Image 1: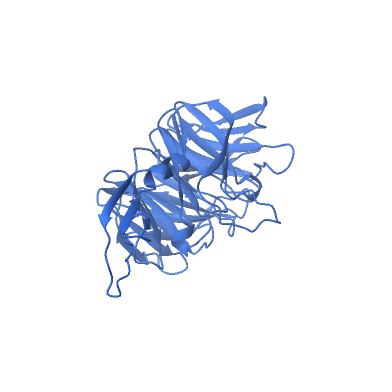
Image 2 (image 1 turned 90 degrees about the vertical axis):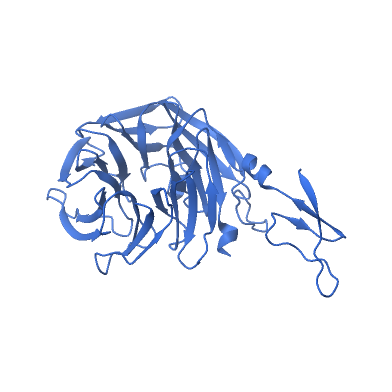
Length: 371
């Protein structure tokens, strides 16, 4: 523990005042002891990796909320992460789950380099036997891989080929997982039959595809975001019919680097564009509803929380900063400067986000910031 001693401030009634700006203050005597606990938080809230983390994703489904997949050092790692107070019996007085990792178990290590994106299938399960993990991987070499494992000896993979350039994002349809969408630098979005391993549709885009998303409240609609700043929604109601464009959003400028469809409210769409974050109400105008500068060196990530529809995170430059925003608050919930990494993901049921670093994964808990 590192402490420093400062003269204590005295109020008009002669009582010792506490400095609210300090990390932790004990002021029950004539000397105020300032204790900086941030040195300890890094150790308790971190998983060390064997290299640069290029992609990361929590499983968003209730049957496998502890599963975390990440790419590091030419391998895909699948692990189970348990947080403090997460496993409480019904007889215990419930305490808020904290981002302190109490158990971390590596379940699978799969050799694969060049992973740019990860998506979990809703068929993944850790609650019921047989246990199963099913993921899609987007690769720099233009391929898409579907990986299925029982976390023991049996692991199978399917390679889907068709893209002509780097795959930037992949996403399983969230109810059954029978469809998989991918977007690429080759100006296309491809929709695959993930069961029969064949291509269903090819959508020609005007620019490179940056993100692709489904929403459980509108499972037959696909959102596709392009580098130009255009976001289009396509209807996939009919299995054999070509997808029909439903609506179109635009931020009025290019250099869109990330986009996300709010999993709790399908009316909300957000994106990182240039130095700003941009928000839309998709039921209203195609023009943005709100926009603010968030990273003066450029924004590179936007992810909605899976627990609160008003909370989202952004990443950007300089210094690879992470910012967590709340639409009802004027101030940031969290602002952290990170070692270089790529990607961030929200836990399915807890207000915890995992952020990729150069040789570690850092967990942040925002539950106290929301109260």
